[in-house]
Image 1 (cartoon, rainbow, N blue to C red):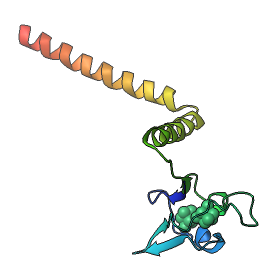
Image 2: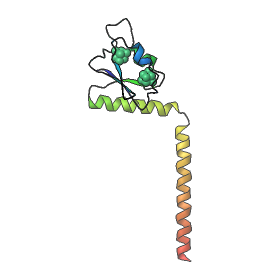
Image 3: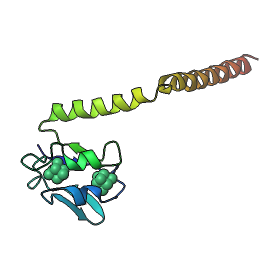
Image 4: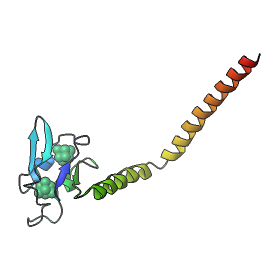
Length: 118
Ligand code: SF4
Ligand code: SF4
């Protein structure tokens, strides 16, 4: 179960490239990726934690690649939930926007039905 780089998060800072003890991080066509054949999760090196993940300046730049579908599904789910719960006012803003749009639609329909009755 190697690490992988989420290209949508990567800002190409090259830090993982320089710290990886097995040279598993590659750059192809300007995109960083991790060769799963070379990645050892830093096990057996002098490091106690995966260096690419530890040093990445983005939240999710280097993530552990799941070994099966459901493990991947839950990993994504937990990441998204963690992001949402970090934004404490997310649901409040979501509800305000939703209720505002809903009221607008309702008023529009009411005025249309009043217009058609006249
Ligand atoms: S987990 Fe370790 S070995 Fe694997 S890519 Fe990251 S730094 Fe390299
Ligand atoms: S450390 Fe993170 S942001 Fe920097 S190149 Fe690697 S994956 Fe991309």
